[in-house]
Length: 423
Image 1 (cartoon, helix red, strand yellow):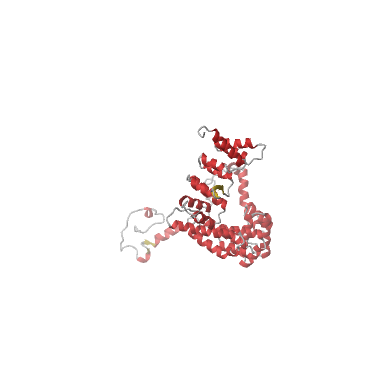
Image 2 (tube, one colour; image 1 turned 90 degrees about the vertical axis):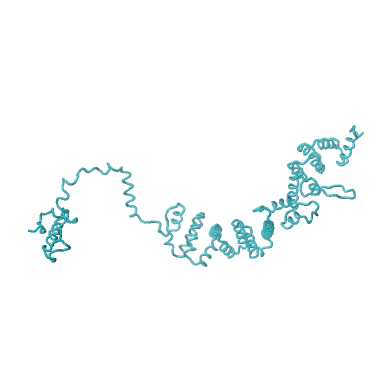
């Protein structure tokens, strides 16, 4: 036998790393497969075939020598409560799924409890409307919204709108949902279909003002809103509000374009205060002053106007302007008369808070007709001369029907006569 002819038990050939050179003296090509003799190949196949198939284990596969028979009890490895939980979870898929039951009460209850639910089986119109009515009866807005969105998604638009028109509670929930998503056109259409023109206009106005920050864009939206909705509602005060708001935005934009301080979201009274601080001219006629024109354009009441102007001029200590605002001259002698929409108590409070001189406060204390009130106010504001005068008038006038003006004149003359310097 040549060295290339292998015996059946010769394993050294396959485990050897020795290289063998090719020789023409070897077996012919027909006796070799890829350089290995057919005899060796057959031997290899025979060796592999002796290995038992995994599907047919040998008898020695599970012998006592190969298997450890020292088993432990299951409850020694895992506790009984844990085992019960595992078995319950394993068998849970065998329980019937109640989430697919077509029962509106059960489905709504599962929604309210946060449990799993399915709306796929509600295919007929009657089932869907019954489910919506059950949700409305529960009084839960989230449940109503979930079912409303399901109905809108699965029905035609006209039919779903008809269902909502017949159920105002569901409609209100859906309108609020659309408002949070800034779907103004859908909100307007739904409310106008129900005949609620005023509500549609107000809802559009609220969404527009709340969610628009830029004055230019807000002005454009308000003009469109006014022309399409509020122009047909002249009897409502909101129409006047929108009109004044448009004028205010136009004034702000014009002011900002001139490089002046940006007033942002300031109110009408804040803008009036800005005018009084920066564009006040006492020499101008009050009727054509910038502050008065602005107040007339934006329907500022006389009381609001006078209070804002007075506070502003007091804050800059413009006492001549204060006199011009509150007093007017009457008669040939030019006597001064209080002409104000504000109560005298409010005027004195504003003067005191603005740290007005005592002489200014005493001047306006004289316009308090009730002497006891004047005495108390004079004490509160620390006007000693006014306290003495008011106390004397109260004392002299008790039990008499004397004019307070006459008592003041008598008191003044007595003070002058008793003054050593005057004598």
